[in-house]
Image 1 (cartoon, rainbow, N blue to C red):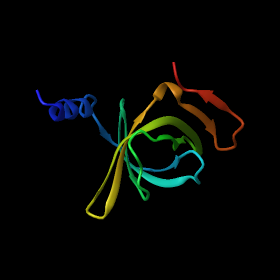
Image 2: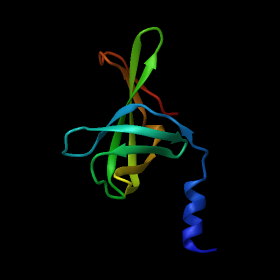
Image 3: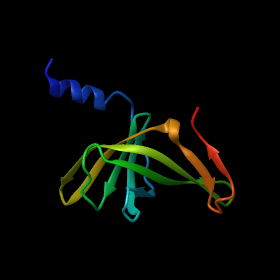
Image 4: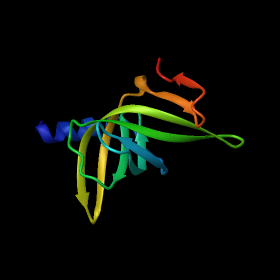
Length: 117
């Protein structure tokens, strides 16, 4: 088995679900970057980004989650860029998300919860 086919199998290890929403990508020593999510799986997320990201870059995904009836929970997930490609005028990145590190808080910032474990 070639190394490339092994990489493809690893990338497809978890089933992906379409998940389209706005989010922010936080990189060390940079302003937050507005992104759009494409899909999500146990292993990570697909994003549309406006900046070139390097494989291995540490980042945090700030993801707003709706709460009924009219609230919002903001989830921050520590992540690592797996790869970033530019195709058909759109830059896409795949990030590996560490869901054990996820933290969430209401928009007001008064309530923090550890979502891991």
